[in-house]
Structures are given as C-alpha cells and as structure tokens.
Amino acid sequence: MGLGVGSSVASTTMTDAQAPFLLACRCEPAPWTPVWFMRQAGRSLPEFRALREKHTFFELGQSAELTAEITSQPVRRLGVDAAIIFSDIVTPLVAVGIEVDMQPGRGPIFASPFTSAADLQRLRPLEPEIDQAPLLDAIRLLVKDLAVPLIGFAGAPFTMASYLVEGGPSRDYARTKSLMLGAPALWHALMERLADLALATLRAQVEAGAAAVQLFDSWAGVLDPHHYTEFVLPASARVLAGLADLGVPRIHFGVTTGELLGQMATAGADVVGIDWRVPLDAAWARVGDRAVQGNLDPAVLGAPWPVVAAEADRVLAAADGRPGHVFNLGHGVLPETDPEVLRRLVDHVHERTRRGT
Image (cartoon, rainbow, N blue to C red; front, side, top):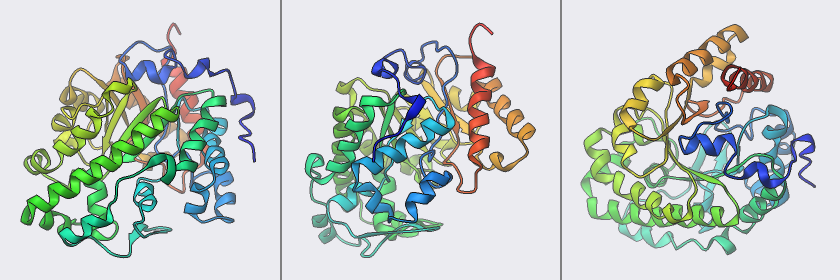
C-alpha cells in the first residue's frame, strides 16, 4: 500500500525551516497560525476505522506502510500544518517485552503491574533500530513525500510509570503516589529507566526524519507542584536535555497541569502544550518566553459550527497574534468528532490569522 497522499504531496522543501509549524515553534512570525490536532490520526476518521476493522492496533503499528498511511490521512483530509506519527506512548514498552493489551474504550492494560525493585529487570534498554524498525521505516517513508513537518513523540517518564504501576488508566493514581512517596529510591530508579526509554525512541525518530518531537506527560496533572518538582521534573528534564543537540523543536504537554506550567517550562521544552482549563494568555504568562500550543476544549467540536468558530476565535484572541502560537486542542480529538468540523476549523484558523489580510 502506498501513502496515497495525493494533492498533499509536495517537495520536501515544505518540511524545512520555513514551514509555519516550525516557525511558530521557534516563536518566529509565520504566514498564518499553524494547526494540528492531538490524536488527529486515528479513531475519528472513517478511513482509519476501516483499517481498524481488519487489524489490531499493534498490527497496524508493525507495518511501516500502514503506519505511514494512517499518519498521512489527516494531512490529506484536514489540511493540517503538521503530521504526527501514528503510534502510542506505550509502544516502546511493548518493544522491550512488556505485555500490554490495548482495549477499546479503556486504553492500555498491563497484565503484570510493577510492584517491586525486581520489576525493574523487565525494563531492558531500548534498541530502536531493532525494536522499533517498522516505526522508523514509516518515518523514513513519510518524510520523502509529506508536505508538512512530521512530529515524533513519546510518553514522559511519570505517565509511563503510572501505567506500569496502576496496570492501566486510573482515577486517583493511588498506587503510583504510594510508590513515589513510600519508596523514593525505587521510584527514581524506575523514572531513570523510563527516561532512557523515552530518550532513545525520540532520538531515533528524529534521526529517521521527524522534524519535531512531543513529550506527553498526560497524567502529571494529578500531582501538586512540590511532588512534581521533586519526583517528576528531573526525569522529564533529562529527556528534553538529551534532545537539545538535535536542533528540533521539543514540545512538552500534560493535562490539568495549570498549576504545574511554571515548573514544566523549566524542563527545557521549546513549546509548552496548554489544556483548555487555563486561558491561553494566562498560561503563556506562566511559561515565559517560549512558544505555546493549544488550547480549544475537544468537546467544543460537538457543538454547532458557529459555537466552534466563536470558541476558536476566543483562543486566537488570547494569543493576540503573538508569534509562537500553535493552534491545537487542549487534549486529543474525541472519537465521535466529525472530521468535517476539524477541516472547517483548520480553514477557519488559517483564514482568521493569515498575515496581510
């Protein structure tokens, strides 16, 4: 199966330093505010659902061509300014032999949660060119033809640790916090190994051709600032610092992290992702002199179009035309979202922010 990117295929000059997405990541003026959506590749698109009926999630990830096809689907359909590689934050864990079941409606479920120091031995070092060959091959396929920059990504150490300790998604993260506070030496050892895992996969993705990376700390918002600074920030900073020499934009994102934004900004990212719970201008003041990404509430996309447009305009007004804003949602696209609304939203943001008009 080829990429089939049709009219979205252009010369690779579109992925160079002048791409609007990369300009915004560097806080440089762009011809329009760039747009992409977390979880834009996948569950809301009918073409993805058709593939999902024939393959398990991890089967899709084991095919470089299918991964490339799914990654390019939202570029073709929606006209977004960046693609993000189709994968999941748990795939490096699967690659090193951790048993995971991706359950629809629940997410990743781990058969044997981590409970003791003995479990650390299950986290061997990642060898990306061997363990993640299909993913890296997909990136190499994509960067030959994509008309927009490609984003690679990984799960941040805390979020990965929480999955391993809880055995899956959690409402209160009680087991995670108990391990973190009750066995700090074990906790830091676990975070160190997970930081190594994230850094290895991100470096490999960039070396294969990804033009930017995003570190997802999806569940860090369950922590207070003191515990975040002591138990989480050092490992995230280690990952981001380990990418500095590659010269690509580094995005750091978490959910319900309004009270942590100041600390997250010190981790070393070039761009801080903002969820919808904090006004964009207030969040920008908290992260300082760097780019921001966000922050429309994903649920808004289920409202009538005039409401969607008005809410998008509210985000743009908070950005106030300042260089360094990447328009995105405050979390991932919801499964029930109409792709046509996403397409209209991309066009709307482009039209509202096009310079000189």
